[in-house]
Image (cartoon, rainbow, N blue to C red; front, side):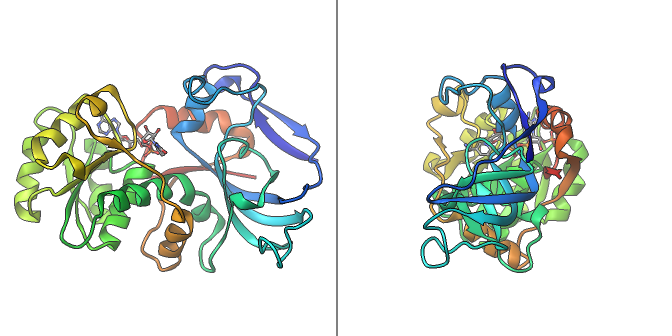
Length: 308
Ligand SMILES: NC(=O)c1ccc[n+]([C@@H]2O[C@H](COP(=O)([O-])OP(=O)(O)OC[C@H]3O[C@@H](n4cnc5c(N)ncnc54)[C@H](OP(=O)(O)O)[C@@H]3O)[C@@H](O)[C@H]2O)c1
């Protein structure tokens, strides 16, 4: 018997319900995982609100949650060490589309990545979406030590991961955030710039010391962030947005494409101490609705995780 958090109708986070569920035995190619930490992302409340129903129609009830980390408790046929390589007791990272807000889940083995030694479950649960998206965007941009990267919304889950990964790639980073998160960005090693009117001028002033902006990762996708990118970056092909909008599309800025192997790459960076996710909030799984309210506020820093 497990517990899940589900919704039977679209709405605000308070439509979430908590209930027991019987888990099936893992079928061929499947694995049962006891989740020790579950990552929360903006996509989760967007899914519950029905904002993704055009691109991803759901059959309700559905369980939100697309990332978690835990321990394998059972494997189905053809999932032993001789095939996909997972066995009972393995520590793993899971990444899917839905179904993560559970104490225990049966998932396809192909959605698992082995957890490297030295990375705890809370950190691991933050790797797939924020870490994987930041990594993919920076790879898409080809960021390296010659770059000064502007990261819009740098204090958020994606942004704070991107600040650290870009530095691991050798780049200099200018990050934007609200006034409340300027010190946080500096702690991460970025040159901090508040967003708001005059953004491009402030970035230009910061860039004078750090070198002109050569690439942009936009995790905001607002009219203002897109306008600043257009003003600061002559080569539009060196900009990527994780939150595509009419503004980014009109400006011809590409949306992030998820890179194959990204979860293992970020897990390795985490194991090497090159990225540490800030856990801003830890909540019990049964309080997932409150976690989604926090995420929906849109002004968090780092990540939110749900714990058993
Ligand atoms: N395409 C994909 O596969 C993919 C994957 C992951 C995420 N995403 C999208 O990427 C976006 C960021 O995700 P996330 O997980 O980083 O979200 P998050 O953790 O909720 O962070 C959002 C950040 O946005 C900042 N922000 C709020 N208003 C802003 C503004 N007007 N200008 C600039 N920054 C502003 C906030 O900073 P302050 O608190 O300092 O205001 C906050 O730190 C979301 O839209 C998400 O849906 C897409």
